[in-house]
Length: 159
Image (cartoon, rainbow, N blue to C red):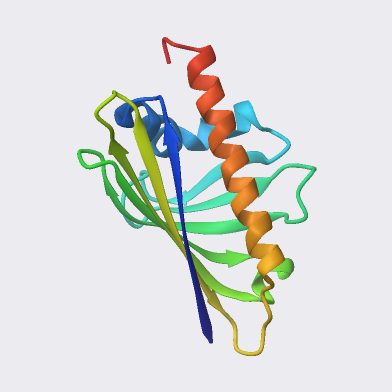
């Protein structure tokens, strides 16, 4: 099994607390509302949203994937950190990936905004080939999702 790791940093004019609330705390209901073509809904199988919670994310019609199962590994609301893993997926994912772990940290900036730091760790199955193009696609989708959430918060200042 191989490991592919990449880091992405996205600056934002939105405060760390508000961004963390949207990206982590409210994401299961907010993202399907903002981008239903990307994520249709999120179903909690077990847990209360905290560490150990298992969720199924059902993707929208425009996705090449049907669903993935996620596990919440760590959450720290005070320090704006969140770690979760994709532990199962449909055949398109399961054939290549053992698991993917995402480490998210939102860092406040002096100007009242923040920087969203995301480390993605792909545990690739033995013999599977995950192309740079696939990883680039994933990064672009994540950035698009981030920008959509950011735009929603700006358009809804009372959020």
